[in-house]
Image (cartoon, rainbow, N blue to C red; front, side, top):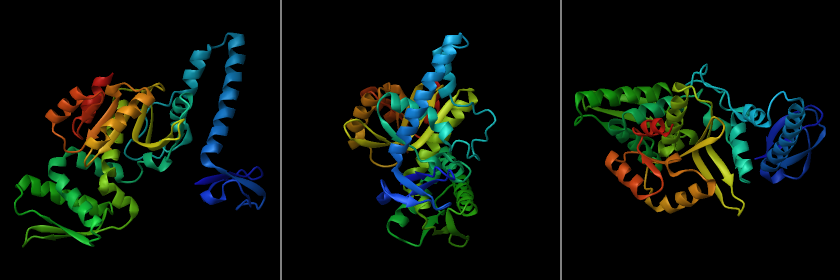
Length: 332
């Protein structure tokens, strides 16, 4: 999307890409205004920010009040998460929260664009994702049946319980009820006589994307956030960041976190085949200058032994949905 910022009424609003570079009337006050490409607009804002910040550092340094290094750290370090309910907040979906990430990429001459809604946990995506990640061996079958049925454009799917243990059947039943309570499915019917559950599917794009693998990104994001909060670390996070390198190559980073404004962790999430992408991620890791143990391949359902073996073979860290939190705890 493109963007306008009206100089008269200060309206900030997205516009279609095909209007970029054109002049239009402000939707609020009708004043003439220009539609800018979003990346161009952000770059100009960053240029102004760094110019003003450099002048501030110079002025403060001349009085001996603070050093330039301490000023920069104070400016880019995100706020701690102590007072935030991680499972129900829109405070992460802000330019301020993403500021240190913009700064980190800008210093490396890499363009970056964030989707604010991707870290808004005031919905239910994070709760359901954490439920799946906590019990993937049992609930993974439900997720896969929904994903497959969506792909085939089926209106519903059937989850069989007859061959499940009582514990697994209860976990699946509770999970299906959670999906209905949170509107991830339109209807949920329990057939006790045939011992199955019929789920009538939602068609909303966000729900389809979630079951098509995006749930693992939410799980990885929440694991990273909880790790940071439990240890009182300063933290900035982004999900589905779009970056463009100097050579024009573009990439999407599933989960990117910045500890204390300077230490990056990148988590790429795979719920399907991943082996053909290993060379790609090795090259991207090298370009970003991230240590191998900080560039994580989180592969749903991978065995612990395979994760250990792949980590030994490549300069990347391999985990599954269960071992991701443990790997993060070993980084610092």
